[in-house]
Length: 99
Image (cartoon, rainbow, N blue to C red; front, side):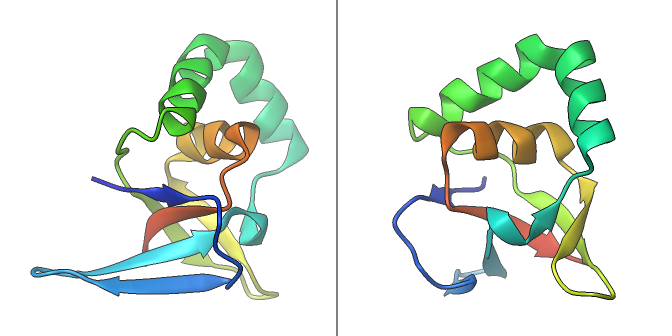
């Protein structure tokens, strides 16, 4: 399960676990287009709101899957709803797998 961090100030935080390396990425480095954001809020707003509340309550969430962008930052391969919810909750960092 993934965690999020509000109080970090580094762009990427690496934490080593027993089975894999967990990467924490700044949400400001994750790109979600305005069109995708609007479409998902309109279509799946209730689900995103539930995820937002979970992030605000400090619940563990499944990590998102990101792909590096040519010009820097990341695109979301899996977890757009979670990324939007985390941004709405004011979370600074989100746990991710980079592919």
